[in-house]
Image 1: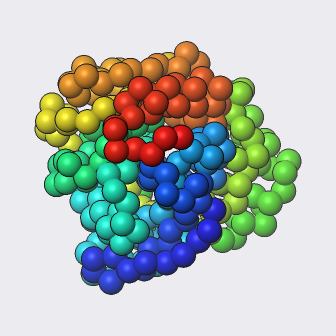
Image 2 (image 1 turned 90 degrees about the vertical axis):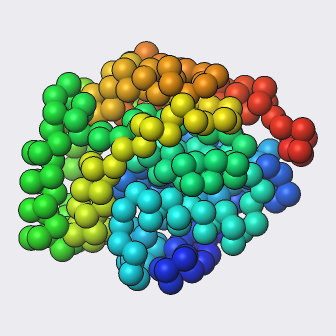
Image 3 (image 1 turned 30 degrees about the vertical axis):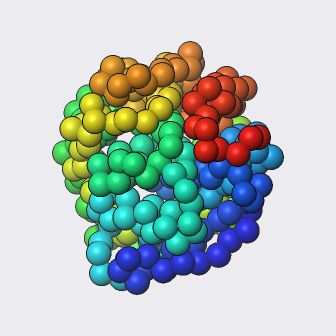
Length: 294
């Protein structure tokens, strides 16, 4: 995918990646917090021949510049999503979000309900994600931890040489797998790439986004959604439990539900052979007449 920049509504520079097939139905991938284009590889590889694919880095993270004036609220990220859609002249794209991206998309649909043709949400929740993570209300604890991170850690670049060592990353993956945070089927190469890039982030900005994410709630939007929706959860997701996905599916009119047995919060890079065919089937069945034939 080719990278370029655009200027959002408040002057913030956003880094945008675009690939796939020009002229076909556009899909915009909306990242999780700390995720980037690497996360989407299982989908982009299967969709690139039939869709125009777009992804952007959140302001302050990875290739995008820090916020010029508007801050880092979920509503701000949703306006950035709108800026990407408008400036690239994407006509009613499909919106696919993972984790935090689900909340960003819901906030976008609150303000611009007619500007997307379909919605796919992976391992997400409509709001207050840390009130249900790990089966406990960790909202207060999480805010304290990330407040300390924001005030005392500027960057974690000192970790970068460590993450480049394969044995270190593999050991980390083994630990998180043992703790049940990922499954043995995890695509380790994608996880290594993501970890190497993550430690370059400004953790002050990262923690600020985290705290906005923790406070955000778009539950009131669910019943008003009037577009085809597919909601995917992981049966073993401890960070966003499957019951949150089931809740959304029960409240979004006509929503389809897929719970991936054994899938954790990283279901897409654990079970692409389950998720990709279901996404393709969903897009084919819900193909509006204005879409170009794949």
